[in-house]
Every structure is written in C-alpha cells, then in structure tokens.
Amino acid sequence: MSHSAWRSLGGVRIVVCCLLFIHGSSRFLTNGVADFEQFFLAHHLPAFGAWLVTGMEILGTPLLAAGRWVQPLALYFAAELTMGVILVHAQHGWFVVGGGSNGMEYSVLLISVLLAVATAPPTRPRESALEGVTA
Image (cartoon, rainbow, N blue to C red; front, side, top):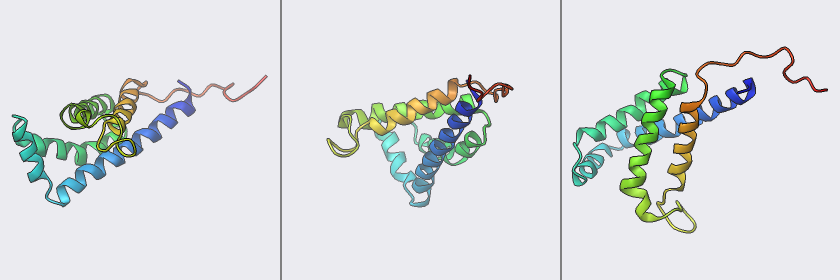
C-alpha cells in the first residue's frame, strides 16, 4: 500500500469514528440508552449490552481514530453494525431514504470501510525515494 493510500484510509477511518461517536453520544445524552436496553431485552439479549455498545461507541472510537487497537476495534464495530443490519435494517430493505427507509445501505458502507481498515497494514509504509517520480 502506498503512503498516500495509507493516509487516505486513515482519513476515512477518522470520519467513520466521528460518525459512530456521534451516534453513541447522542444515545447517551438523550437518555436513549433506556430504550436501547428495552430493544436488547425484546431480542432476548442482556440489557447491559446497550451500555456496552454505547460505551464502545463513545470510548472506543477515539482510540480507533487515534490509530490504537485498530484491528480489534474495527472488527468489533463491523460486528456491531452487522448485528444492527440483522436485527433492524435488513427487514426494511436496502435503502435508508429514497426507495425506502431505515434500510441497510448505510450500515453496509460503514461495515465495508471498517473491514478495509481492519485488514490494512498496521504501520505506515516507508516512502520510496522514487515515489511520485514519473518516467
């Protein structure tokens, strides 16, 4: 992977982290965790899972954005979003807006980005002395 591609993927990683952080923060600040707990219970999942997901979105995303524990955190968030697709979005179809509502297209995009981040080389590539030189 070239240095510029590695930097670009890092920029996309930061944007995805901002989106997930805002999602978790909004849920926390609007007392939406209580409703989220009820959602978990309705799906026979432990209520503390709502706090785990919210906490990971608030505390895990800054670490991921900073380049810490990239692979495990990116895989965790990809799995979290996959569960959201299975439990919520797939039943509404593909489109988030336009051809439908609350579908899975946005989540699939985020999952794809997170999987790309998780599988990218963990360290910055060394710049070649010939990089950018054309014949």
